[in-house]
Length: 134
Image (cartoon, rainbow, N blue to C red):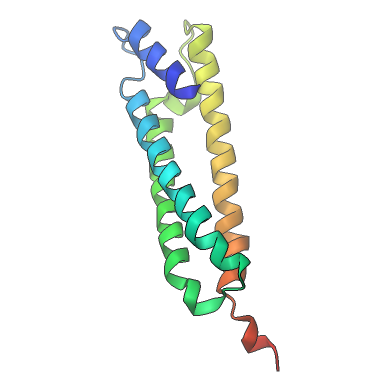
């Protein structure tokens, strides 16, 4: 939905200086990276955690996920910059306004997801529970 809206805004308003040129490309890149990231989580990291994996054995997968989270943050900042901090120009059409509202929501939800994984899930997974059983 957001990608289609971005493509439409760029197609219809491309001649305007306020048009977020390159936004659809940045969204496509973020979506591709997120899809790959989520596949790794679902196929590798989460099954390892569910099967009782802890501590050092999860260090590298968690490190990779956290680096990718940082990369997602870079992508989100690029999108925010292209979309002028999600503030549409005064003459923006309804699609443009909805696009920026949707991008703000995406950013908030993705940042919350990253926070929960980086600060709650991953530290718990990296804690070697055997060191606390004595």
